[in-house]
Image (cartoon, rainbow, N blue to C red):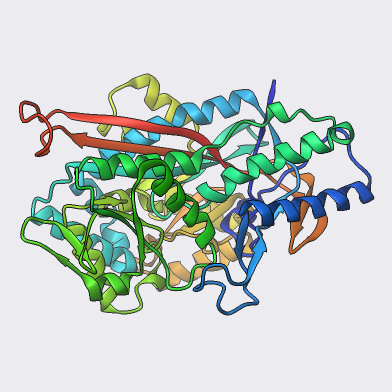
Length: 484
């Protein structure tokens, strides 16, 4: 009744997941090997990572985030996969296409996005700037004939209710499809090699094709334009130590689909890019038909007006944006909280059974306009998480800090509370796991997070190179797979 799940351990002291509960790593409860065997496995794992590209940039080397191939270390990992009841695995997979469809439906309701985030924009300049771009697209009646979403929905198994509860839905810069796909093979290799000590079966580790499937989705969107010389443009940060996760998608786009990828920062797009009269995006004299954002999700990515100009330029073009500005806004914490309100899902979906399945995974989510909930959070701060409108982890507030922050925000008055939402804190069961970082293995008490990758491509058949006799929307759900 169990399937093993594969996780890539992200060791971050200030991780949002690390305090929704601690680090997302796992261990087996059967067949515990002795310390010498564990150390041997750790050495084998570190060597395997180096040989198979399971690597990240080394912070100790100042060039590791800018020069490929310089300053590499193996990615932090859990030595073994987790176990998860198969029913929850199936539930999460079943939810993926429902959330993909929901994101697309909500993205088309511009008034809902603007109204839901109207108070937030008063106290959050980053969200306000995103809404400004979105409003310009609405005023221009900008239509996206092709819409592509590469998403990841994150869950934890709550021990209090024995239910799978969603932490967040990521719609921009969804990370680790490249590296986590390799973790699957690492875990299978270790289990096959040390199976007599572990009492585990490598066949129970499900395959992970996230990187190949993400590349397939990007290639499908690229193919809709029927322009062989065009490229996919990946928007990246100036210093990116996780570039190798991204390069796996570049590899599969080139080798499996014959698609060229270029990497550009937002400032480079502003300096080199222009939009032709027919809407074509050109960057450094190359036609771009798909823009894939692995940056642009944090205020730190917009240090000047140049970066905001680049974001607007790309949004005004006919290129497929992954995500578009509307998809980006759907992924905000405030929209997640709004969708959890009674009768809101019915605004976007018709199938009552599917609506019920989505609601079943919603944790408690509240606006800070709810005085009773705020009072309860001040009295019992350990039961809540205070979340700002930010992605990328490390921004959430927990424990006694929740109480202090709420008291401060109430004193400030005005719309200060609108910059946050409150969420039910999830309490998964903890277990011991062997963690490997920098070639050093240690055992720690950890909890698990389940992430499901999903790709969604929607297009209209009225494009020039397709039949002009129909404009009905058609959709493809390309991916249901796991993340680490």
